Image (tube, rainbow, N blue to C red; front, side, top):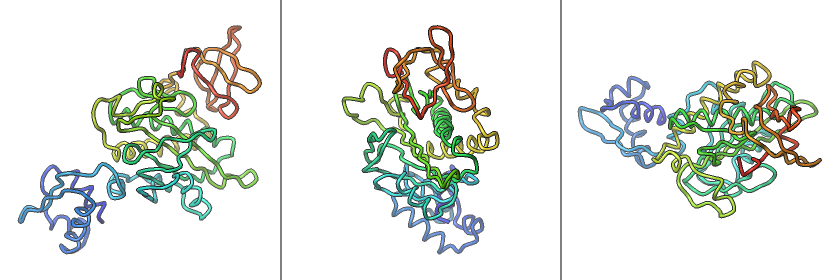
Length: 325
């Protein structure tokens, strides 16, 4: 009930009477008073005026109550687990996956002490500055389709940033979301198999939100949402929009069995499109021009002779010919 009261207070521009809250949730005035006091202890500033009711004066940006009051999707975030500090949300999700946690369970952290990116790289995870979350999935499709979930999530994150800020977020194939040609989000998808059956998939996301100092070796290639936007944003609202977009995108992808429902939109966000790219293949590097992705999420690259090759993300890395993008 605490999260529901918070959501109602946030939506109202005026005072909400105690009696209205009692009637809405079928509880006593004492129960409402207790829930409001719990929110105050968490840091919410709620004004109480006799004969007028309660008014939310200052809300928190993040936290369990804030997220529970925002996320009302059908299955994504069906169970929410918030940790102020944890090693890795992907690890939490995998442990829960082994314990039969449901499809859509969401693991969120205020800080990670052992965040990871692709190919075993560490992921900078300072406290309070960013969004760190992992969603647990139990898909009914085949393992070869699961690799496309990274692209689905990238599309959802870019769409959510646009919804919140109006900025055109781009995607550097396959899993980096960019603002102003600098990385603002990374995605790590991991899978547990039983023979040819997917036991579970975890899709972990880190979004740089608040301005911060990055390590020198990556500084010129990364940014944050607020640095690009030029003003503060709500982490709670951004995560809410990501989860809403992902539920819609995932359902469309699962129904089609491929990326066809998202293809035009994804290619419209693809910063590699029409640009020269260098394919870092263990068999030998080569260069070409990116022509978009296909319905399987492979990057179509045209070489100097006009031949188009479908490049699979699990086998190669892609860089811009003259830099990161």
